[in-house]
Image (cartoon, rainbow, N blue to C red):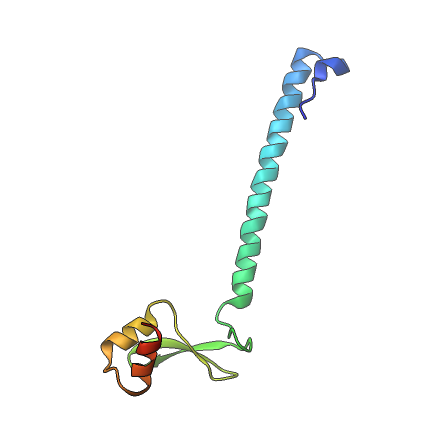
Amino acid sequence: MEQDVRKLGYSQEEEYFYRKNKELIENSRKERDAERAAQEARARKQAHWMKCPKCGSDLQEIEHLGIKVDRCSGCSGIFFDKGELETLLQTHEPNGFLGGLRKIFK
């Protein structure tokens, strides 16, 4: 809601500074909000980085069949980053367990 400051008894110069201050405050508020959102995103990422999605324990990066995968230190679950499973299925003969995985993801 825009307010006419001249009706409140302010001069043209005071009105200019009123509007300028209002603009500066709004810009400052937007910058702080963006900074706060970025800081919250970093904190969320840090809280969940290399944590098991199943039990919350730390994940350890290990090499398995030439591909780095993440293994949970708590539940021993194996987790793949984007593209790792596809690489594993393409580079190894599709029989046994890997053949079953290929059928699931096709």
